[in-house]
Length: 398
Image (cartoon, rainbow, N blue to C red; front, side):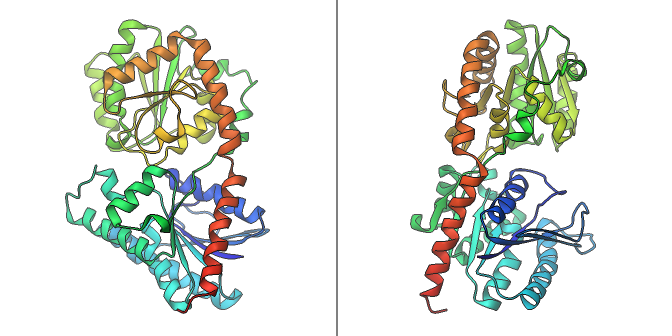
């Protein structure tokens, strides 16, 4: 099975769940015997080519800006992605399937599909309309939505990471239900397990006093992640549990405003905005945290919640999107009402006040992650979709 995969993100350029998904899926597919060729823009450098067994990565220098907007950037970059892919076909022969991850690489995927009559598979990680709660407010959002629709139309099949995302794709793009496969994201537990028995006392001093309980958030600091709701919940938590310390890691458009709000409310000593942190520091904070919270307003899946669960950290999440499917209330975590600071404060307080219950939920979550969300299983499911598409293609006229 020869797979041509297009992705806007790939290490060292990983921004969110899409990048993490592809960086884990591609090598897992290669380990299962697929010959995987990943074509990606070299946004943050990296070797132009990497070859390791069945996995081949090609980082393409993007065109020089300035760009009018992200749509213009995507179109112009896709020309180069498509050129490299065309050269690959010429040098190494045809592919069995083309796998495009989200709209940002739709143009190259569609180009290679029609040029070589190769079936196109699309994974939709999020939608523009979903991010905006069912609305499109400007021309750029409308143009992105149109490309997303076009990609799902051109695709032989569509993969979604959750039942919630499958609903979005059916609702917003009118994709037939029998054209969609739901395959979840996953997590490799090894990077998190390594910190289980390590003494992290000195590292912990950077973030909290010895008597304080750490409530940890990590992710983009943007509206859809609900960090502002978390900040609204902080005084409610501190009123009942003064020894809580909130550590908020990540960057984004709302970071400056939230730092200012925390200062205005006199919370600076109890809320630490770290900005960007490394993967290793994130994993160590997961290991230390007494409560990890994800208060998202929109979340197609929530791969970072799986990472926290892989660390055996007690989680509190909004009952929204894919998070509501991953976290079972009172079994593997606590779920709260999205956008509701009172509910979020209750979930955090319950976790801090009942550490034994929190530990039991965290252990159950860890077992679930190991059994259901490992990349080997996800790669096998993805290969099953590949096999189906290739068989159907062999029986179809183009």
